[in-house]
Length: 325
Ligand code: NCD
Image (tube, rainbow, N blue to C red):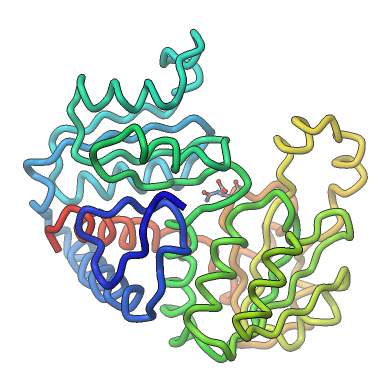
């Protein structure tokens, strides 16, 4: 790992992996600042923390929530120099074969950015960017491996909704092989409470990586793996749903398998009859059929509130990294 543990301070740090969090207090600090950002945004109070900063937002993969919430976060913090490119694969010299390393070097000269926010399909893209960059890099999703800011906003949402981030039974459902969000979130749940339980629910071919399961167990988390949502749903405090990651099936030439698996899980009001009244349904989104629109009116459907957490937690992280919180 190129990026070092935070060791209690985010100032000047790249944020590339949830493995950098080693103390609960680091997340608690982040959440305290996020609460402050939340109250400021709700009161429509414009921040000035990033008034003198230049921020680059470079996305090599599609995004709705992560891209817009980072852009909004930067603006709410008063930044006036924003270089935001959502279509790096179409409009940058990546099209001509430029390496990520050289693109990051370039930004250091042309902009010059004080911080780079990067989404990229390669698992090790953040590490590559950190080597090429003289300023902090924030990983906004790297390949199939990590999505640290999503995990932070997910945990913040759980704290908001259920009032705690320990002693929870979290069921993670869907594409646990290719999906990156569950991998980052599971590790943060392990850090926040050894008494958190995780149930991975997926078809056999989409099981969570064995190394992740082993690591969670080593850290004291009770992990169960099953295909049967009904076996764990009645006990769950959180149902975290994910979509099948069609793009990775395509890349692996497995569209036949994708078509077979599509529709394997469908969260409907009838399914939720099995769940606790206090449970919440989360999803990093986008959804592509795995949660019925009829569920949206159920008070347990937290996925729209969840995306709102992205703005506050990303504001907090940016202010902390740039030493302005
Ligand atoms: C997720 C991602 O990009 O990993 N989306 C997001 O950032 N909210 C989940 C997904 O695309 O399935």
